Amino acid sequence: MLSQDLVPLLRTFAVRVGSATVDYRQFLASPQAAHLKAAEVAEALAALAAKGACAVVGEGEKVRSITLPDFHTVALVDHFRLVTMEAWRPFPREESPPAPIPVGEIVPVDVKGSFISLLDSPPGTKGIVKLQFPEGIDSFIVPREIVGTDLIEAAVAKISYYLHSGKNASYAETKLCSQMKGNDALVRQSIEDVNLRPKKATSMVLSPNDFHFKFWTNLANLVLQDLRAKKDKTVEDHGVLQSAFIVGYAVFHSKGVAQREQEREADRKSLHSLVRKAPYVFGFEELFSLKDARGVPFVNKYSRSFITSFLEEKTKRTEQENLPYLVRVHAKSLKKDYFIQRDLLVPVFLKKLSETAEELRVQYLNEWVAELRRDSIPAISKTDAAFRRDVEIKVKESYPLLEALDNGSVLFLAGDEAVVAPEARAELAKCFAVENILKPLDQLLGLSRAKLLKDARSYLPFWQTMPIISQIVRFFRRILQGRASRGDGDRERGEAAGQPAVARLAGAESAETGAAEPKSAQEKENLLRYRRTVQALVSQYVPAGKTIDGTLAELAERWNPLYDPQKKRDLVDDVNSLVRDFLRPVRRTFLVRPPDLKRIHDLAERLCESKSLVKIKKRDVLMRYLELYMVRCLQAKKL
Image (tube, rainbow, N blue to C red; front, side, top):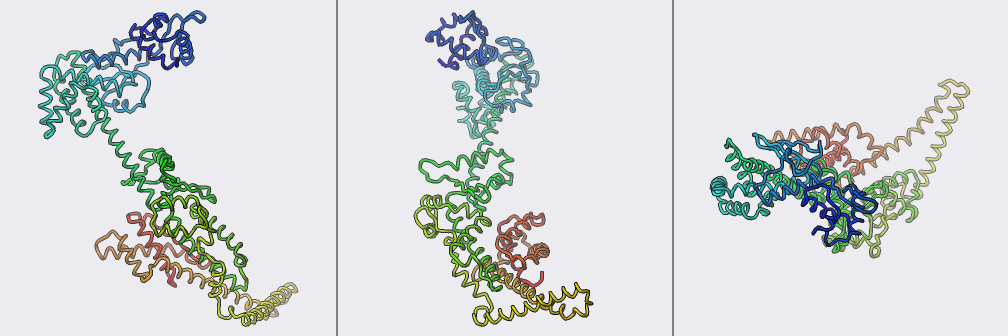
């Protein structure tokens, strides 16, 4: 026999005999224990005594008596169950409890100020409270563990007892029908439930709809108005008044709980749609910063567990699914997990491939053209293996999200099970070498070493593409560089010998000439690379067939919230001026390190978060405008 099975039997017997200490033999002979074996009871008692759930008195192995330390609470709970069945009984008072209560265990609670908080207590909370009522209404004591259950049922029973008295039911029906016009049938049905079906009536208090909330609120107020005017109140009157307060606050609390639960459920549904919107791929930080429709972060509104419980639920597969609703991917380089909705895996992967391919192509062309201009062949352009390895390193270091999405088995399942457009599914199929195995990254990105090298050579001056001419130019370059070197050596020797500056003039001029030529060439090379990069950015930001100014005007029309034409133009001018001021300090750095999509995006994001632009609501369109206008500024010679 389990020890927890013995506890309710002991409590029932103790309540029947009215004592916290019961005789062991009498207990075994009682109807409650008639089916039990003495050996099993003795074993279960020993386990209970070890836990402190009871105290056993005996000699050796013989048990004489059993004492329940929580008998006063058990007796109180039993009294409230009696009130539910016999509503004329008064609620227990501190002066006359069903069983003696230890000193200091009763905690006073003001009904008007703290009863709602008492109802929010976790289930099973121990202790006894003394409910104190206003307007001279008697107080009573109740165990905290039944405040939200048996107490409500007992209060409903006392309201029913009130309605059965005299013509109270007819009076209440007439008043409530006049207060709740159009709901006469529901009012009569509810009063009938209170009178004949107290369990159903109690459920109306604990889980109210809009009608039940109004019914119980009006009925409680009606009872209070009727009885508070009496000068000489009976014990039954005090019980009904106590019950009216309890039921009124309880239905108000239940309505609030239901509304909060509805709002919580609505917020959970909104999470389903939020994870399908930009940025599409979420880390933990992005998930914990998600907000509701009013802009309140969910973690502030509830707690972090609201997000974590959503993740736990949505990252588990059901029996019918091969992929969960949210798929977790891992970026090894960042040691960071990302979450993406399964229907977005394929389109986001393909989009990242496209963006990365163009950025890497521009980056390789810039690097290789610079080396070829210096008559040096890039090492990674010599073999496919070296080039492939370099592409993998660049993706790992600069594109961690693409690295995380580069998972053949997950993408194969997504293409097979998720809701994917036929065009995207066909495009994904081209990415697989065999089932579940993706092609190497250089092939996925469409980067061909031979083609890139050919394209890089096409950017070289004409004379560098002709072997004979290029060899002649290289010959003369070496001669000039040699003279410059000798000039430097003569100057150093002259300075060491203490020669005057006039005697070293020819050597110095030679040295300066030799040093200036490569510096000027480098500047021209940097400028050319800068202009090519900016032009490539323009082609990526401006749709085919449109101009950069026309695209800017369309975007400005979408993000600009003003209606007055002059004010709209002024706001656009202010934003443009803000962009130009923002770019001036960093523009010269672009000659050394040409701008790319990521850098332009980061700069626009920083500017978009500034206080000057915080009132513009359409952030995505504004971000696109800022990025494009930055590229427009980089085209100009001066800001």
